[in-house]
Image 1 (cartoon, helix red, strand yellow):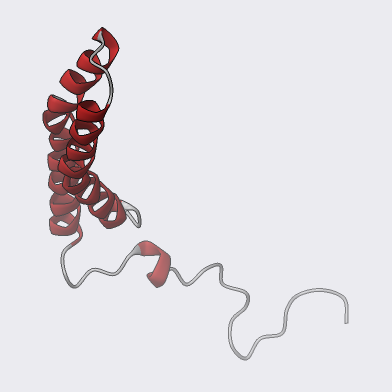
Image 2 (cartoon, rainbow, N blue to C red):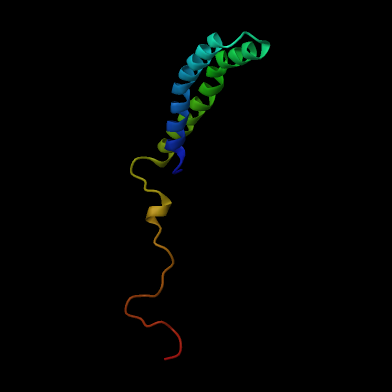
Length: 97
């Protein structure tokens, strides 16, 4: 649960950077000789947005469902666990004296 929101941030940043990288690829494409490899590379870049948008949407849905499930007043189990009880107050531990 600790990695839900960082995953959303990473997915959103990746989605935001796709147009930047596509533009950089087009800039490079205009400066290189036209070959089947550069043409195929440019076509792959043009179809990249849906492949990045899908996981970004899934990350947001998982984050929202996780936050709704835990609720605003519910602390995580890690913070509320008291751990094993050592001994009762006022009692001495059992064992040789």
